[in-house]
Structure formats: C-alpha cells, structure tokens
Image (cartoon, rainbow, N blue to C red; front, top):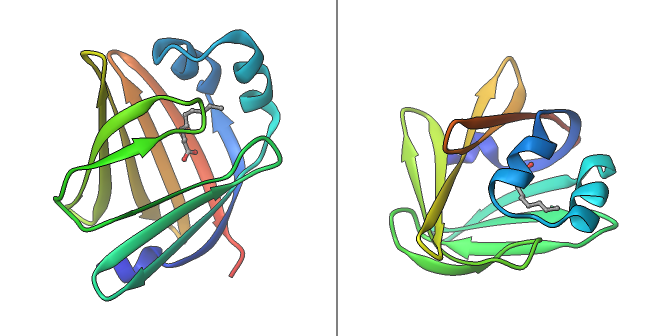
Length: 133
Ligand code: DKA
C-alpha cells in the first residue's frame, strides 16, 4: 500500500538525469543545478490525500492529490502540467502532460530503497532514495 512510501527519503544516486531533463525541455542553467542537488522526498497521507514534497536548496515543491484524480502541478522547472497519480502493482505512477508532451515518474520500493524511474520517450533516468525517517 501507499503507506509503505510514507516517510523522509534522501537521494543517494542519480543516473542519466541530465538526458532526462533535456528530454523534458529543462534549460541548461536549471539542468546544471538539477545535476548536483540531492533532494529530500517526503511522503505523507492524511484522510486519503497524499502529499509528496521535494525539498532542495534549488527549489522545494509539494503536490497534494487523491489517487486517480487529475490535478494541476507546477514542477520545479516551472512546467504547469496536468498530473494524475495511480497506484499500480505496488508502484506510485505519476503521469504529467503539458504542451502536447508527457512524462512518467514511477516510484517503487526495492530492498528498502525508493527507486524513482523517470521516463520521457525513450529516455530513462533512475534515481535512488534512502530512508532517513
Ligand atoms: C525525482 O523525484 C525526479 C523529479 C523530476 C523533476 C524534473 C525537473 C527537475 C528540474 C531541476 O527525483
């Protein structure tokens, strides 16, 4: 269940993220920052509403949503997306669409780590988070 994702996570490894950011149209200046920061990712649930906060020295964002209900999201790189998050086969699957484009952020728990797989077309980045609390 989603409850297993609840807690505070710290990124420890980021693979192919520059290519992913290019694929979703992030400009060079933000990519340079995005490549070096190690965000915290904080998940909580209250009365069926899920909160996902991403905190870093660059920018902090929070989205609050119910599963399978579309909402508007402003991303750290300032895209305004239509977003829907579903829980599929034990994974939190976040689909963002904007300007006729789309990307998916899939979060899974593997050996006690939170693995975020970011996909845009044929570009895939994988980011590993370790539990802090
Ligand atoms: C993650 O949760 C992936 C978040 C993807 C953000 C894309 C934009 C970043 C711009 C610095 O680890």
